Length: 72
Image 1 (cartoon, rainbow, N blue to C red):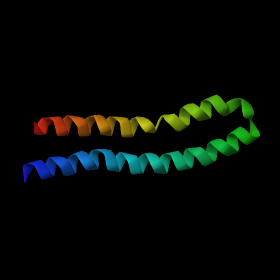
Image 2: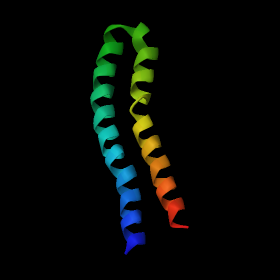
Image 3: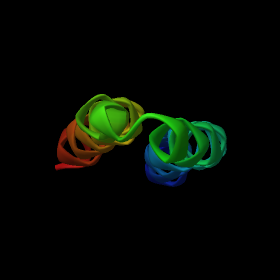
Image 4: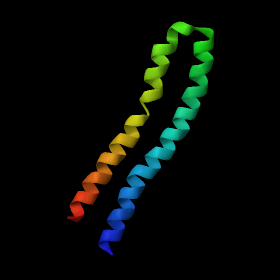
């Protein structure tokens, strides 16, 4: 039973941040496309702003790996 709960926790540690990241990138992407259309010099900033939410998924993945390694 404990292994199942740790597995569920690992799945949630990746899944919830992934959904939040998808929502954030959708909003940032549409705003970024509009901004770059008006001011092309802002494209580098928009690429950086699009990549920032990915850190949530990466950190969730690290937590999931730590939880799975705890099983062993």
